[in-house]
Image (cartoon, rainbow, N blue to C red; front, side, top):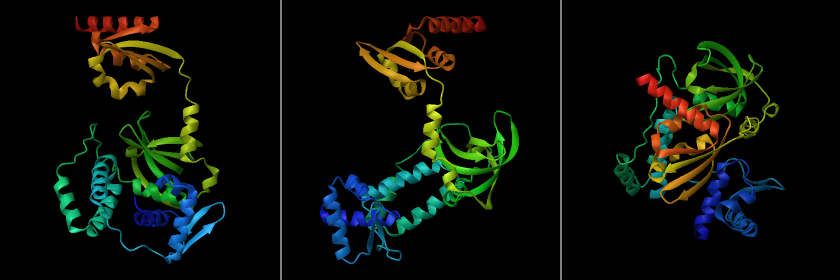
Length: 319
């Protein structure tokens, strides 16, 4: 990247955040801190009102805006891919807002970039497999409201369907973050009813409203802190498992290996030896059964016993 392009990119980065640390600019463009200081000084000399706070970072004075930015073909294609992902992995509210944003982006594209996007439109697809949820029971349109509550530290009121208890409950909650996992969005919030942090599946929320009451952000951990603490409090995985798999079967198993706690993978001729650490055989053994005689349990003996019992159970069932 030449210096002119880098200066423009730094200016865009500064406009994207309230405060940007010199180290962030250095890391993003793989340049030294001395070069960062020179580049920022060059922008200031060119008339860009950049302020600095000692020990904090740089900021652009309120009221200054860079004129509309032109996108490259590669950037436009990345945005189109993001739109396809949003269609499948977001809810109605976010899809709608992202659609509006894409309309604005398309409006500033040059003609060649617009033609390029149109030619790609039918050649990019994101396929999501999984059960569909009734839109009458679960409207699945609350992500934008949740994001607003997160940004302003607003208390939310929800009607939530508990899958375990199969009942609807009214909750007041203080949201601390959202994350996407295993095809679903999850809201982590302090539940005032249960007096504790709870993990709410967003697609199980029937109703949601924003309260006029607020909470203090610093009374709760950040989302990253909460998730890290949850991982550290998880049950210790003390069961060591070694299995041997036909190499040709690895293509079918690979996506689920880390879910079961894969620790080591060693190729041996036409076999692959896999080592796992886990806390239970319950799901793992049933997963292995589907691969038949292409999988062999090496250790421990209790897992071999569990596998024999499962096979016998299946045999008796079909006889």
